[in-house]
Image (cartoon, protein in one colour):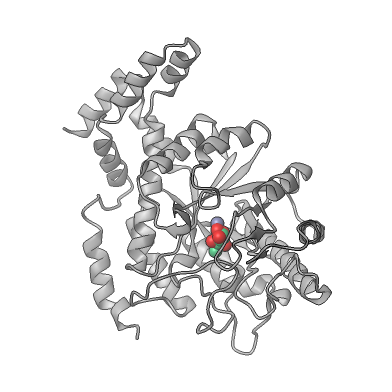
Length: 418
Ligand code: RNT
Ligand code: ZN
């Protein structure tokens, strides 16, 4: 079947394939820098293990070890993915001139100047994340620590991050989503659950007292159910993060990572619930397997359902800030980036190609028979033809064409990294 035949088939169902492709091409999605180097960053000893309840597994050769290597890998990714890219940086990816190393509480916008140049040269916006993990000042808590000194250090890091986010937004002319996530929590049954949460709330209050323009910087708090080594209790639980955002309109928005809930909960269903109250929300799209496993995003049912809800709720016009968040060290890292990105684009395009007006009408009329049949029919509609056309129009390789490029890059570049 050709694209024009596919387009006709969709048109007969009341779906405009041209409009779907045009819409998707304008939706920014954040590409996480941390897939390229297993969440190591450049500001601490790369031989030390990750802390904060997150972990990468695998030792596939070719991890990026320097800013230059990471940027080269990102350029390889950018050649192979359609859609509108925004970078997503962690504070630990600061780039220091010789003799200008700064600890996280002393970071300055200038430490991200090279990233600004990178983004400007490629027309990208940039999101930002303070890094509250994998650092000697984790005691092991950060913002929720009972230790005044520890808390002060991490609050100052958060404030520095607000200033850096404002700088990124101003330099790049696009809003900067600044996400606060800490792995603060306990391995075993706590003796005090509220104390750490009150300290966390007060610490975020202090961080967000740093001046910023809410039109440019979108602070969020990301919740989590548990992490490795912090199985019993997480300070920034779902209720905590959501309540913080609800209590701070115009200052903070909620962020949901679909790897951070109990296995039978789905973020797809939470999106419309939150959008009934919050003007803006943010997402980390990942693939959980049984727990927060941060696997590469697939074109699977829940990814499709998440995208369907984003589209249905009008989230593509800025209300939903979409970011990828996974890290796989067991396969070619460039391919992990490309696979997850392309699958999210596919899921968004697939969502844009659903006859949502008809579905809504059938539901409101109580025609559940018709709705089920229509939804099942749509599963075999000629989606692949539209996807191929979308890639062609963006001058990006079709499925089946990009892996050879990555293999070549692996042979020429990645395999030479000892
Ligand atoms: C961890 C959170 C967090 C991190 C990144 C690196 O469980 O999902 O978003 O993955 O900040
Ligand atoms: Zn996340």
